[in-house]
Amino acid sequence: MNEYEAEQLSILLLQTLTKLNESAAFVRDKDAEEHWETYRKAVGRAMGIICLELQAPLWHRFPEVKPEKMGGTYKLPEDIYEPKFYEFDD
Image (cartoon, rainbow, N blue to C red):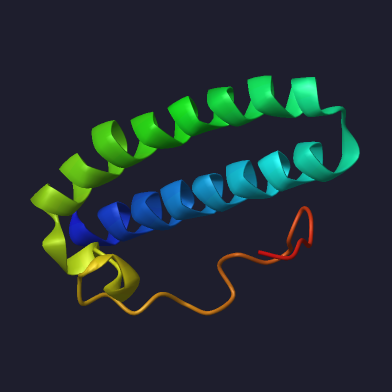
């Protein structure tokens, strides 16, 4: 893998995390609380795996693609999170 490919993969992983977060907010806002709790835990596990087992090793190999908001130097394109699946209040 080269730097460009690592950049593309890093963006994809960030987009995936965002979609998972949006999906959790959707379930929280639209479903019964007992379903929300189960979903929240599953999404948390999935996000943890993405962060710890996929992103962290990638950013270790290619620190130049680690985003600024994660302590790196890479400036993310502003539009990578569009379109949103679900708009929610933080």
